[in-house]
Image (cartoon, rainbow, N blue to C red; front, top):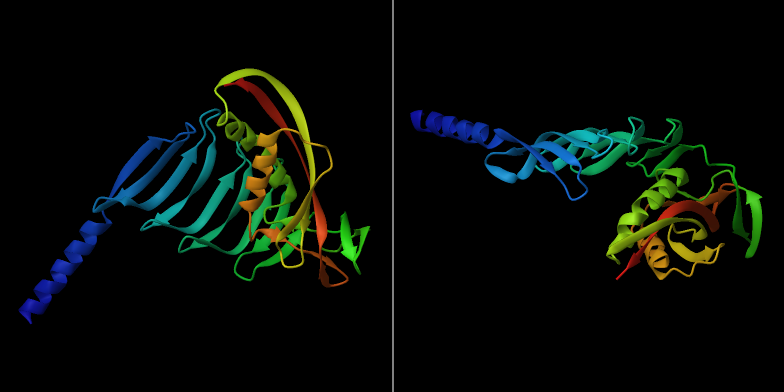
Length: 251
């Protein structure tokens, strides 16, 4: 009996020691400050609260909690450079679950999406006129459920706009003055949720931009929302427009 008690005490002690944590504050490659905790017994595992703050202005980018290296509980993400919520919802075992709320950069709600049931509960983008194939014929008609993307088209366009500079810079070395460019494309979202044709409504000759668009679309596999017409899924074109500040570079 004494031996069993001793073993239980030892296991309890080991468990307590394993859960002791150490606070870490570090600056990542984007000059964002991350503050989190790791297990003293395994410094590769985040365990506890997590906060990421931008370089300038120093506003919170995301907050949440880790449990043994995996996201858990409620997480909140903010639009860059302000304190306006971009999205919020829960994680279980590092996966998004249940209802997630999405907002634009004015604080207005874009979408309500359930990751558990994979159902778009509400979207302000519904009832839009889109190009859709009905009976094999392409028509421009209003749809009760418009083709879209989880998080909303506005947030997708905003991210494309803000992230392009870093992608473009990777191809070059020296910077030159800024030029503003508007990108206008239509992405065919097929009935199975995959992407078909990409139409460039405004011609693009910049190879880097084309590579960027292709990369970002491919990275969102499984996030596209299929259009519905009279209760049936249909293939429709999702229009995406965003402006970018292109810096010219020399090799």
